[in-house]
Amino acid sequence: MLQALRETIHIYHTNDVHSHFERWPKVVHYLQTVRKKHQQNREHTVLLDIGDFIDRFHPLTEASAGKANVILLNDAAYDAATIGNNEGITLSHEQLDTLYTNATFSVIVANVFYENGERPRWMKPYIIMTFGHVRVAFIGVTVPFQTFYELLGWRVADPFDTVAQLIEELSEKVDAIVLLSHLGINDDEKMAHMFPQLTAILGGHTHHVFEHGKRVNETLLCGAGKFAHYVGCLTLTIDKNNRKVDARAYVQHTDTFEHECVETKRKLNHMIEQATNALAQPIVYLPEPLHMDWFSPSPFASLLAQALNEWCEGDIAMVNAGVLLASLPKGVVTKGDIHRICPHPINPCKVYLRGSELKEVILQAETEQMKQLRVRGFGFRGEVMGQMVYDGVTIEKETMSDGQEHVRRIFIHHQPIDEQKTYAVATIDMFTFGHLYPEIYRAKKQYYMPEMLRDVLAWKLKNMYQQ
Image 1 (cartoon, rainbow, N blue to C red):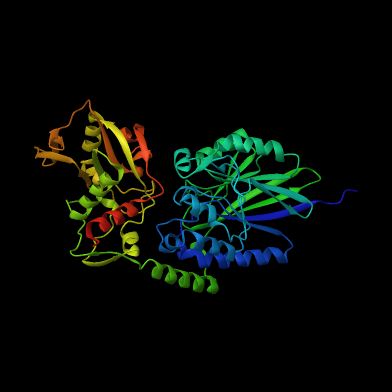
Image 2 (cartoon, helix red, strand yellow):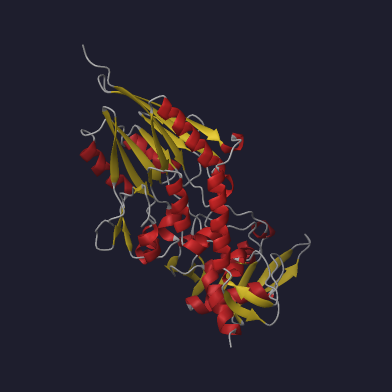
C-alpha cells in the first residue's frame, strides 16, 4: 500500500506596497498570527513579495536608498522577493547592487544581469523549497524596461525566453512551479497560455486584485492590489502519489485587521525619525520665497523648466506644474524639503520633435481637460497635471466665442514655430510612457539617469543661490 504523500503549503504574498507603511504593522501581525496557526496544524507557510516594495516617494526609502525597506522584510521573516521597476530603475546601479546586502531572504530575479552577462551574486533565478515529501520551484521575473536598465549599467533579458528555459530545466525536478511575476496582468495571462507547466503566477506591477484568483488554462493567477491594502494567499495541496496539485487563492483586506505588531510600529517610527533627521541636511538659502501654482504662471515652475533645459541641453523645455507639490518659503532649504515638494521617481529626458508634432503637443497641453487631468502612474506622485510650463516657448492666445482661451500662435525663441524643423525638447520621462502625448511617446528619446527631477531642481537652486 502506498504511503500518502500529500502536503499543504500556504503561500502568502504582497506586491506593490510602494513604501506605504501605514498598514504595515497590521500586515506583520497578521502574517505572524497565520504562520503560527499553520505551524500548530503542521502545515507549511511561505512568505513572498512580488516587487515594488520600495518607492522613493517616502522619506524613509529616500534617506536609506531602500535599505530600510529590506530591514522591514527581514523583520517580517519573508522567505523571498523579486524586484519591480522601483527597485530596478529608480536606484543607481550601486544602490541596487548593495540594496540586499543584509537581506535574510532570497532575491529571485531570473532576467537581470550585469552588463557583461554575469548574474549578480545576490540574485537567484529560482529557488527550490522542500516541504515534507514535495518540492516547489519559485521563479522570479521583472518587467524588462530595457532602455532604463542599460542606462544604469544592467542587462535585462526577455522574461518569456527566460521562463521557457527554466521550465525546461526544472519540470522534472519539482512537483509544482510558482512564478513571481512583476510583469503585469497582460503578460501574466500570456505566460499562463504559453506555459501550462506553471501551477500559479503571483502577479504585480498593474496592481490587479483577484479575490479568488483567476484561472487561465491550467494556471491560477493571483494578485493582491497595491499599497498593502491586501495580503494574498495561495494554498497548494500537492498529492505526490497521483501527481495532482490543487491550487486555491484568496485575498484578505487589511482594513479588517484589528491588531498591529507593536515592535514593527515602534521600529518603523524610529527609522522614520532617523530618516527625517538625515534629510534635514541644508542645500541652499533662499533670499526670497519661490511660489508655485498648478494653474497659473509661477516663478517656481518657470525655474524648474529652465533647470530642465539647462540639464538636458535642449532647444526648449516643457514640464507640468503639477510635479511641484508646494511653494518654498524664504530661508534654508533642506534635502527633505526638496523631496517633500518633488517626491516623484521621474527622470529628466530629451525628445526630438518636428515643429508640427511639437505644435500638436502644445495644443493638447493647453486644453483645460489636460490641465485638470488626475494622473495615476508613470512615476507621478502628485494630484493633478496642472498647467504646462515652458522655457523658450511663447504662446499667443485669444478668447473665442465659447469663452475659452485658444492657442493662436506659437513662438520658439521669439520666432514662429517651424513645422519642418526638429526641436530638442527637454522634458520628463513620464510623458514618454503610455499615451498622454502620442507624439512624445513615438519620438526619439534620450534619458538622463540616475538623477531624478528633484536632483535637477536642487542643482539649479545651488547654482542660483549658493555663495
